[in-house]
Length: 145
Ligand SMILES: Nc1ncnc2c1ncn2[C@@H]1O[C@H](COP(=O)(O)OP(=O)(O)O)[C@@H](O)[C@H]1O
Ligand SMILES: [Mg+2]
Image (cartoon, rainbow, N blue to C red; front, side, top):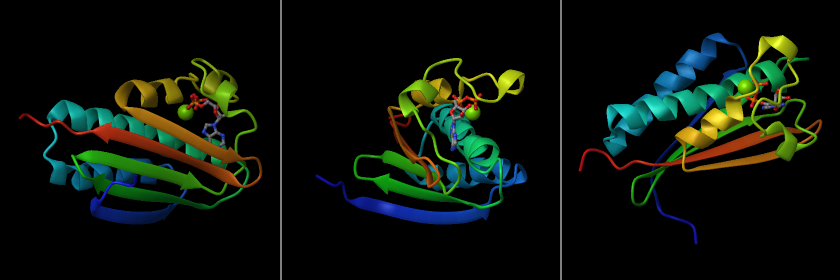
């Protein structure tokens, strides 16, 4: 059953590394409505950074394009962030999600998905080669209560 949305926001920006910081700040501002703890906010920002960085460096490694961020604050203070690119896509999502797996050689650690998983309650990856990738992150905001 779909949960009622208390608030939503969509952001579309070009896949440039300067926008990784912008995405972090935007998500933090949106999440503030749920009154998160400093730690919850830091975790969320880190996870979103990893997903946006992947869209920029892997998704659009060959050509420019836009990244779409869909934010939703759901019933019960569940925060959902969808990070979508229309880039190269991922042929084997299961393999890509494994710790230390990277297609970027020595430049990257291969820990992006592992970080997202450890800092969020749920991570979903939908991808089609040549069509793009959507990463959905969900985090339960418990706050200080
Ligand atoms: N948005 C994306 N588009 C295309 N490939 C991706 C995307 N996100 C992740 N990948 C693939 O999954 C691999 C693992 O991602 P990640 O765990 O973040 O490690 P890293 O970014 O350090 O390589 C990447 O090396 C890349 O091959
Ligand atoms: Mg990464």
